[in-house]
Length: 216
Image (cartoon, rainbow, N blue to C red; front, side, top):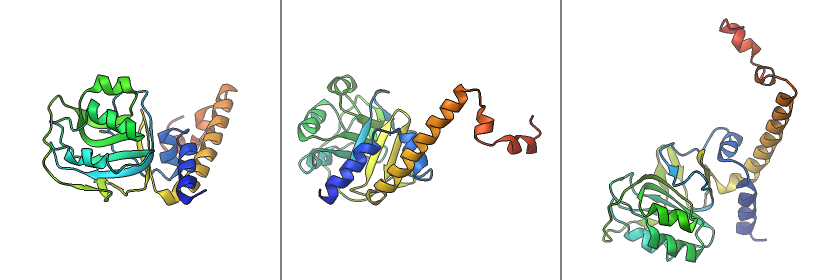
């Protein structure tokens, strides 16, 4: 297997776990801000990051990016948080599906929500706007972008569900997967013990903390 294939396989295994588990497994690191939401609660996204640095209210670079994406890529678009124009809609979704794109994460707005949902294309965005965009301004593809306090590199991997989005560096996939599986096993054990009558205070050894606060 090629290095890319190995990473994609690790990412595929990691995608079976929740975004919160992945976030905790890599030391409470890599979460994108809570303003980015899926268009519907059932949407999940996972894949290799393909970044787009676009201008507000202009989606020319999204059309350009779709000429260069590879199957399995997730488009991560910095539209500068501009909410008053839907930079992505049903036609771009049709093109993305044809190219095998795994999903979209955009620091901005989209439109044609019902059509996107009907097509089953995962979209995480900051807002929804009926307004259209221009197609005139240049930008960049496959360059580092920043969402809030998270620096995103092309070739990173992103995972998202209704709990949120988390970024994992390609070099960290193996170790994060190992830690995430360990965490899943531990939580399964916790759930079993709770069903046996053990309290979360006992499981998490919280008696000392409660005592220090005068709680009993």
